Amino acid sequence: MDQVRIQREVEEILEDVLAKACLHEGSIFVLGLSSSEVLGGHIGKASSQEIGELIVEKILNILSSKGIHLAVQGCEHVNRALVVEREVAIKHNLEIVSVLPTLHAGGSGQLAAFRYMKDPVEVEFIKADAGLDIGDTSIGMHVKHVQVPIRPILKEIGQAHVTALASRPKLIGGARAQYPQDYIRKL
Image (cartoon, rainbow, N blue to C red; front, top):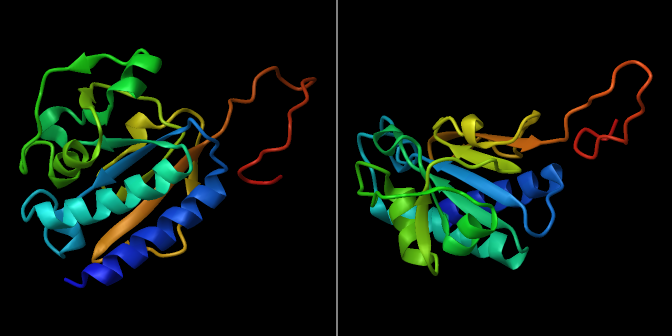
């Protein structure tokens, strides 16, 4: 495992996704992470605390510098609950749930979030503005409607497949309505 390469790939992909998603300060960004997939293993079968910390710390630093909040999705063993800062949960009226992640229930990303966030809590559900999915963890349930797929500049981090989502406001009103320019697709 080349840690420098993984950090470089994470930074390159994240900066690309953030530019394409057109997020603003105060936005929420969800991360789904399979450290097993990054290492070339099967999701949930070869979790690595080290990889989780490497990736989450890098992402948290980049997002924090831009005023964007991170939500780290857990695995199905915690019903895909998310770790966020307590202030984010309170501000957005998110329901805090009682669970503490482990390496194989929640995963390495959630453990890293508990390590690097100031006052982390688990919440059951969130409507993020955009997100990054490292290892096909299925983040779509936590990104606002209408979701817009983003094609990251790189397709993999380590050996994990990477996808991303942004969101845009719903178009309502019908044939006579007018709509502002789509800031993601630039139509």
